Amino acid sequence: MNRQYADLVAPSPRRHRSHGPLVPAGHPAARPAHPAPAYGAPRPGALHVLVVENDPRAADPLLQGLARHGYATHGATTGAQALRGHREADLVLLDLDLPDLDGLEVCRGIRAVSDLPIIAVTARGSELDCVLCLQAGADDYLVKPYGFRELLARMEAVLRRVRVRPVDEPVAGRVVTHGPLRIDPGARTAMLDGRLLDLTRKEFDLLHLLASQPGTVIPRRQIMAQVWDDAWSPRGRTVDTHVGTLRGKLGSSAWIVTVRGVGFRIGSP
Image (cartoon, rainbow, N blue to C red; front, side, top):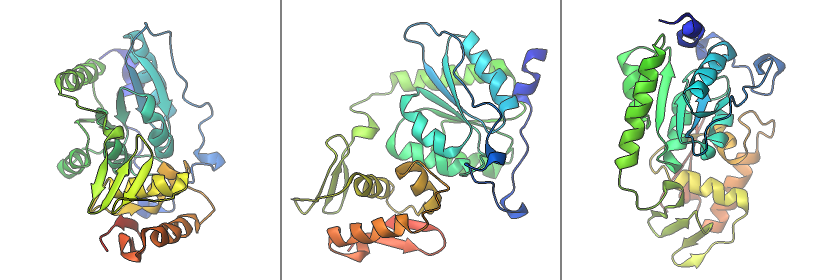
């Protein structure tokens, strides 16, 4: 293996939630000395790869290596940044051990609104981790340490499948229906029994997030990251306030179910 990729393929330190509280993304200890930048001057029309990696020592050579091979690259160090930045990417390389959100939550969040190819690049090497990640929506799973040429080959294989996949319309623009509830993210309208709901921007985003993953409990931190772009907001009652208002506009508290200690899921009145 080339020496220049020695740091790239080394596993990043594991984070175990049982070993103490996670460091908030905004905390000085959680911020890298230098934010992960975009590298190189990619050719026109180059595919954009988002590298989600909490360790700059692993991210920097990976970003540079991908840029040398003609990809447009950009980095993210937290799950919240990934949930915002994936909209501009053609493929995501996702580390599962992030400081604010678990990588599986990030994977599910992206997959709920997009067909974007996702390759998990992680130190989690067990069969269970792989199965859970693929079930969360990842297209492939690569365990650290790995070879850079293998990563490139897996990226090309995933992108080939995406290019030949029949596409009727982007997932992000597909209408979501849940019983009498109809949500059109393209037009940003929500209708219940044919009646247009008067929702604020955040109420619409919250309802769309829940309805796009029926039967799934969405954790509070994921909601804050995707709707408010902040997984560590000090506004602890923000989600509850918006849920309460949304229930009132939907006409029944049964539309949004609270799962104590976890988050919320879409329900049926």
